[in-house]
Amino acid sequence: RFPTWAAFAKHVEKAHGVKLGAE
Image 1 (spheres, rainbow, N blue to C red):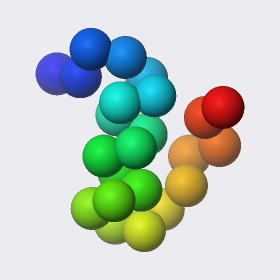
Image 2 (image 1 turned 180 degrees about the vertical axis):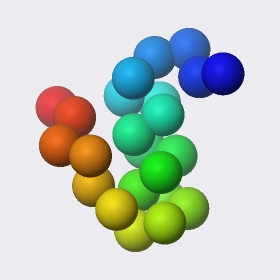
Image 3 (image 1 turned 30 degrees about the vertical axis):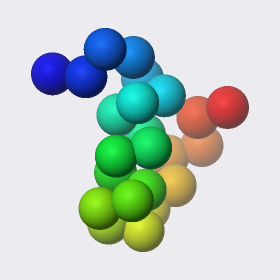
Image 4 (image 1 turned 135 degrees about the vertical axis):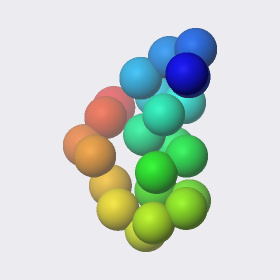
């Protein structure tokens, strides 16, 4: 579980190279 949406989005971007459009 991630503390914030931004932290989750950053993890996904780093791990999968996918941007989720989070500001």
